[in-house]
Length: 508
Image (cartoon, rainbow, N blue to C red):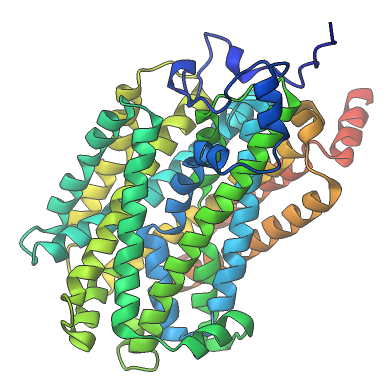
């Protein structure tokens, strides 16, 4: 009898019963026709260089992940970039999406190779005080993102109802999507993925119709993609384009979503194949999101770049600006915008609920029923969102200041998702033979440092403009010192320098 292949890591198919798992074994989608690698049919299937049928079985997690690239916060960044900078920042949108793809591929690789998601691995790899801080940071980032997503959906409902449903009413309606999520999840992962397929198609069709009606310049679009341009007047928009691409909760989410397929991490060939197909699927999903983001940016570039009111356009009044500019050709463009925004807001709030389940369950090792975790996660965001809706249901700059504050809140959390991710996928004890190579590691750190610098600029710009008073400034300085110290700890924790310092401290 041929010698069996030794397991690389603990098999995800045989996880400990007392530990939290992203998906129960019965909920996972079967990918392989046989788990026996000595079965001739299974061997023949694994030997194929590519299979459309196999790709279809793996398709789903990447498209749920790409919703974070299409949420209302991203759409607002797109429309502001187009209105204020024209076509000139399209190249940056392209490269920001490429950086986002790299991060998401690392997240998927971590989940496939280990059979565990990022929150679970953080719980296992970091000391108690550090993992509690990481959990708090992840929850804060998720709440900030969810407020934007729910508000975006509520604005869409207000638009589509002709203003009869106020913002707080739209928030309550959006909160009900939690029950849609719970209902569909009981019918299997593929049903939930089909819902997201419909929502992404709705977003794509809505903004494609807007693109067709406004007819942006194809030549300017191509030049904007291929020729890098950046001026002092568009720095703020450039930072916004890059800053809103990476969502901390999405890094945690993708590492869990890939576990919805039955992959035996003890079989190297299965892991290799899963990594390959998830990489293809994620690339296709982010290509779709990139095209949609281009449509939004170029529509507002064509209509409002150089206009008097360009700097005042935001999510709440964007539809009205479009309506006044283009009116009704095939269908009122105000409602086309509202439909696309509603699909964006609804889909992103559901994925936010999903991410919240994994973050809470992974960090705290909670064995709660799905409906209970969903309600707890949803409550964390809905209560502050209703308060926000009651306070900011007005026209003017208040909502823009709120969105800016929420963007800063999420930017602060970026290091606490990316640094643990890169540290873990680089670690042989965690990844086995699937740890990333030195070139990928260097590129990943360069991208991470770049994103931290970009978001640091956003943070500095916000506080220098909004923070006043000696007492508040002093408190923020102390908080900043603690923040920087924790980031340095995460970076140096497993480095040779850290090991030497630990040895010296023990010997002294």
